[in-house]
Structures are given as C-alpha cells and as structure tokens.
Length: 388
Ligand code: FAD
Ligand code: DHB
Image 1: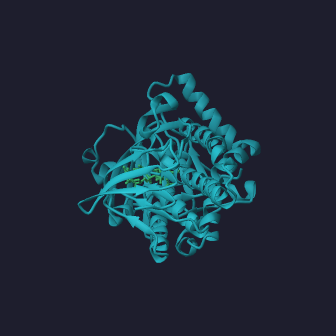
Image 2: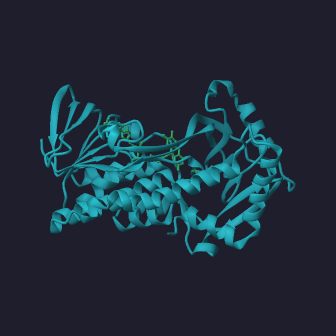
Image 3: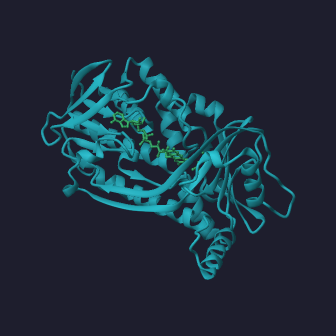
C-alpha cells in the first residue's frame, strides 16, 4: 500500500488534515484504532473558535454546524453570588459556536467518504518505521491481515496516548507538563438551557461550567477529585452540588432534567517539542494537552493541521521544505499562548485545596479585576475567541 501522507488517528486533527490535503489534490490514508460508531459518539469538547468555524465553512464542511450549532456572542463569569457578562463580540468583533466535537467528526467522516477517501477503522498494532528516511512506513493489522503503508510523510494525529510521539526518541524531545490536582465531572442532561450563554463559575466548593448542546440537551461540568468514581454520584447528589455552587442573589437556578451520561476527566497541561522528527509530524493532542477550562483543545488541533497542510502543499507544489521545517516553531507560538490562557483560566476559576486564605482572596480579586477592567475583559475575550 502506498500514499502521499499516512495519517494516524481519526480525531479532529487527522480527519481535517485528510480533508484539507484532499482539497489540495494530495492523497492520504487515515488509520484509526476505534470503530466509526465509537469516534462518532464519544463526547468531548463543544466550543469552536471563529477561526475553526471559518475553516470548516471555507472547506465545505460547515453546513450542519451553521444550521445546528449555536452562535454565542458572550460568556458569563459567576462568583460571589453574582454573574458578570463578558461581551465577546463587542470586545473582539468575533464570536464562538457551541457545536459538539463528535458532530464535527461526523461531518468530516461524511466528507472524506463522499470523496472516496481512505479511512481504515479498527486497525491495531500500529507502528512507525523509517521516519529519518524519505520512505517512512506504518505497519498495522486490519481485518486480520498485516499491512505496510508506505508514504512520503506520516502525520501523528493519534492523541495523547498514541504511538506517534513515542516514535520520536526521548533524547530528541523535551516534554513540559503540569498535572492539576482536580478533574471535571461532566454530565449530559435532557433539559432546556439554563442560560443563553456559557457560565464559568467559581465557588469555594469548586468550579462549575454550564454549557449546552441543543435546545433539549445540556452539558454541565463540576470540579471533582480526579480519582473519584461516577458511581459515588447519584443524580440527587449531582444536582445538590450544582445548586450549591451556583447559589446567587437573583433567584436564578440551573434547570434540572434527566442525566443520561456521566464521566470524569483528568486535567493536565502538556507540550512536547519538537513536533517533527524527520518525515514524522505531530498534530493536536499527540503533541500538546490543555486543561479544558479555556475550550482550546480541539481548536489547537485545527490550528496545527491548517499549518501542516500548508507546509505539505508547499512541498509538493514547489519542492519547498521551508513550511515544514518551520512547522514546530510556528505552531508552538499559538500553542504556548493557548497553554498560558488555559492555565490562567483554570487557576483563576478552580478551588485549590492547599490555597492559603491570602491566595483565596487574591483569586477573588483577580476575578473582580477581570470583570471590572475593560482591558482585562478584552484580554480574556481575545484569547477565548482565538482572535490572534
Ligand atoms: P483525538 O481526538 O484524541 O484523536 C486521536 C485519535 O487517534 C482517536 O480517535 C484515537 O482512537 C486514535 N488513535 C490513538 N492511537 C492510535 C493508534 N495507535 N493508531 C491509530 N489510531 C489511534 N477539550 C475542550 O476544549 N473541552 C472539553 O470539554 C474537552 N473534553 C475532553 C474530554 C475527553 C475525555 C478528552 C480525552 C478530551 C477532551 N478535550 C476537551 C480535548 C479535545 O477533545 C481534544 O483536544 C481533541 O480531541 C484533540 O483532537 P486530536 O485529533 O488531536 O486527538
Ligand atoms: C465545553 C467544554 C469546555 O471545556 C469549555 O470550556 C466550554 C464548553 C462543552 O463541552 O460544551
């Protein structure tokens, strides 16, 4: 088997890269360990930056997002029993769309299949060889048979636990990491929206995020012990926690409904550099992770593959390796800003058990500063919509 670009992983990074390359007349094969049903139903992120919306629209896969996604012009920060609106559009001229990651996945899979793109689901034993030569290869099992896929380039889009990053020798890599002492308990609820906009709430008992999926399904999270088990959380206990942490002076209450999905995610900041080794390029979670508070994970993956697709196109069009050679440096500029923003939002909004009374007061003062200063609100809004 031979192709121009072998893509490992059918997450947002791998699928969008394959789609962008196809539009530039470059052939790829996408290898995915999970089934199509699995990738199309795994619940993950929900916020698309303007730049992500733009690229989906411009490349013909934004139709359903425009129809079914919800355009949001602001978010709210809640603390001390009050809610404060950050007007994203007034401050930046941009907006965000709330549209679930697995819906983006469905749209990209449909587009690749409609264009006769090669997507192989259920592969196993993926291994990478020869990346320091001009003929890199991926070996894998598919439908009981061993295959070798030869390519000009390999794109490692296989997420944090994939095989691509470990294929770069440790001696050539530098990893930066911070693991947070808390996680998010996420629920999906059958209920009408509790709020027109997303609410990021700080409370002594821990952070809460109120998000949405549709007029009838809501997405909500609360800060929890990352080692806790969903079995410890009855629906009643979950609602009590939401109501307590969202207590406020104006009588507003989160709307209850049937909880039909529960899960706990850990939180870390992580960057591995370089994002290239020979003919192997990393994109998305394979190279970096952000805590979800800034809603950046999926958007960073999109930013990476946009840049990578351009570098690969330059290589085929004009035999220029410049774009590819500067991929790590260019991508990292945006990645570190998003790492900073996600760390900042996480630090400002979560409860750290070991924080001193002084640190708790400073945290509150920082929130007061952000909502009362147009300059600080603008900085938050610019980072949130990705306006740079
Ligand atoms: P992924 O989406 O992880 O895709 C990688 C793909 O590669 C997967 O489909 C995997 O099955 C496949 N794969 C792995 N190993 C191999 C292999 N060896 N061979 C072939 N295929 C392989 N971000 C937010 O902003 N907000 C959120 O609320 C949020 N929630 C999240 C919840 C969870 C449980 C997780 C894990 C992430 C969450 N994120 C969130 C982050 C966001 O979803 C990711 O940043 C985004 O999915 C990155 O896309 P990706 O394509 O780089 O990686
Ligand atoms: C969602 C997730 C996030 O991490 C975030 O910051 C905002 C919204 C969501 O799943 O809707």
